[in-house]
Length: 137
Image (cartoon, rainbow, N blue to C red; front, side, top):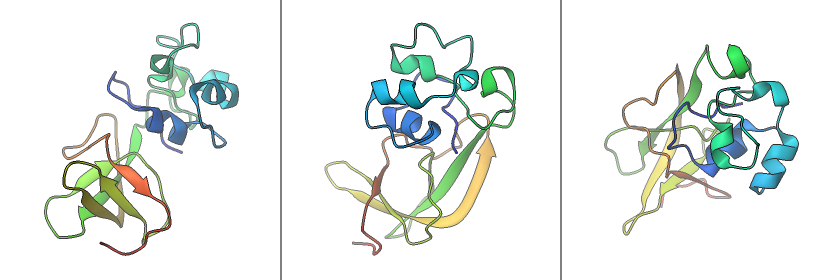
């Protein structure tokens, strides 16, 4: 399970991927969250997305969030080019992702990951997973 990055630019999807179960909104994220996985420096009143900063159910340090870092999934553009990284986990080598812009960029997971305490070069928090699509468009 991924950890929420220790910064203020993480997304709701980062939180969804770090919390057990399948929460669909912030209230459900807090309901499913493991209390010991919150970083005490950011846990606050548990009424804001930012309370999940450095949240980590996998353990690894004070509040669970320090220590081992986050798992980043290496993605390659379907048409070739520079690798990108996401925190959205998958175990499917056929999984496709998209960076939704005026001209969508589609990615495929190449089966490799890196564990880092900070975002690797090429990380993009706006990349989204595509459900039910296994071919590059």
